[in-house]
Length: 141
Image 1 (cartoon, rainbow, N blue to C red):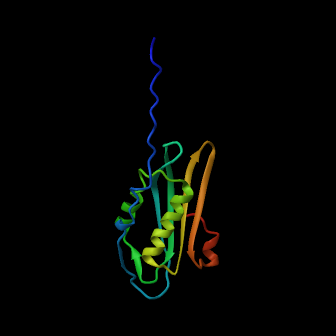
Image 2 (image 1 turned 45 degrees about the vertical axis):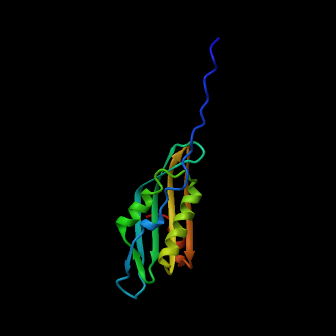
Image 3 (image 1 turned 90 degrees about the vertical axis):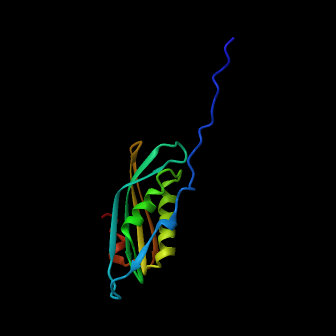
């Protein structure tokens, strides 16, 4: 008699690779208020339920107080989510929290626009500070 096939538990990714220490900053070039918008079209993470990859555009919009985020470090920080098993909402809020804590901007919007899966696309918006009215409804790049 043949033994039944052995079931193996699939190890799901976790959030341990996320590394905010990768972020670097430089002094704002002016004390006059201005808005910075960075758009990443190649963000990936992993669904913690299925283990499948998730793909998103990330829009980071903020008014710096004292510092601005350096772009290569921002890219490396985004890439640290690559193997993290994390839901869309947690990704967006984690990024907002990490960036707001490190930069202390006057205000910030972090918007993630997730590719469709099962016919459903998602957009998650996390804010910090008092976002001006003109930016509250502008949820695209």
